[in-house]
Amino acid sequence: MRAVVLLTLLIACAEAPPRAPASDCRSTEPMTLGSARAVEPRYVTQTGKSGPSNRLVGATLIVDPEPGTTKELLQHRFDCSREAPLGVAGARAVVTSGDGSYRVAVTSDDNEEAREILRRAQALPR
Image (cartoon, rainbow, N blue to C red; front, top):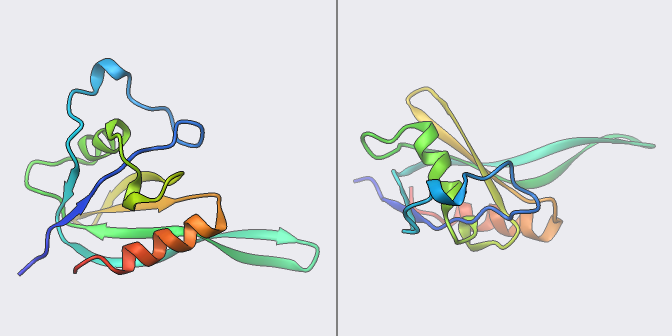
């Protein structure tokens, strides 16, 4: 049986991509996504004096959406939500699609927040 993952999300205004205009946001209900098939750590590569290194920035959740949900609708719901992704203040979410599922990248520029995002994502039911 697939577990339904309930994620409540808010995109931090200062760090997020452009948000939907307030007039386009009609629902403030929590986000409901299909089951999380997998969770992957999300890294960025930084180049410093000692060479390239990877830095954790959050997690990518691979999810099966509810029937009738498009990538655009899912991103719109993230953009309009009033709560932080995975309950981590300062987190932001970007949705991409592929292979019949959606990839939800939940990230933060803050190291502690990034570790907390990954911890909470890994604790979600599969």
